[in-house]
Length: 140
Image 1 (cartoon, rainbow, N blue to C red):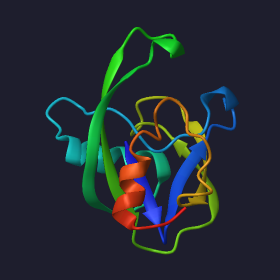
Image 2: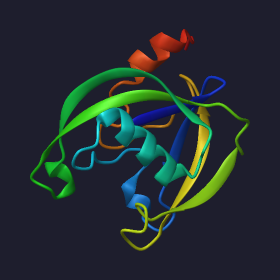
Image 3: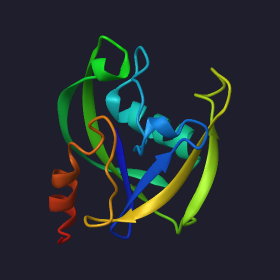
Image 4: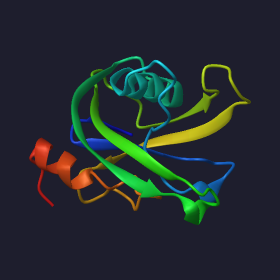
């Protein structure tokens, strides 16, 4: 799970073709033999298309039951803070293919001011936001 920030703004996205997927942050899975540190960077790049990302720190971890989404699974999630080191666009779309493993899924990205303008994030994606906000020292 990647909280990508730029100037006290959090990167979030929607699925224009699947609005029921809600508002999310970049996230994904750890491949066999891959560390979670490497996985978060790979997933953030694959999902956003941004090449100017740096990992700042590990924020924490938790388990999340996704049975409400039709999968009898408990996910172990690790949250990281990444920064965008260059001036990004305010909004953009990116076709995510998991490195060519599946058909393109269009994501629409936008920035939300921390902490007050962050929309409700789906499925526990906001679980570590308080830790991120504390580390950035931004007020409500």
